[in-house]
Amino acid sequence: MGRELEESRIGYLLDTHALLWAIYEDADEKLSGKARAAIEAPDHELFLSSASIYEIAYKHRIGKLPGHEHIVFNHAALLKELRIAELPVSMEHAFAAGRLDWERKDPFDRLIAAQAITENLVLLTKDRAFSALPGVRVFW
Image (cartoon, rainbow, N blue to C red; front, side, top):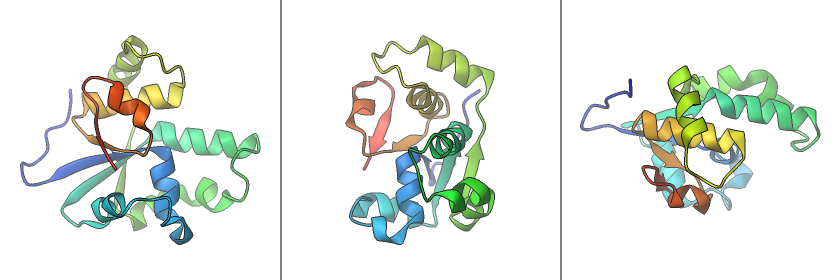
């Protein structure tokens, strides 16, 4: 069921931290120049897993992301402004995440990795742990 990209377009799935850093201008020291260029390139298709919104809302609620109310309560408008499409978690994604042969136990990371593989998307992440997973193409 993976999506097929037009040959001239590259599809990127943003990891949760990549979205946060793309939104906040003062995070440019955290977001690499290559990552910023990939996000801003008009010929790139950008996606965010619905699992990332869940992760942001959950971590905000438990106090791990203080000061991120703007994202929690305005995520749809922010995604539209950045030209980022939502990538819902399907049963195929959930099944693939559960079957990943990967030591990583974080359910958010497992879902995002499975979506990148299933949908043939390049994962925009600083997290090097994704590179060890066969089938995940990482860009940073």
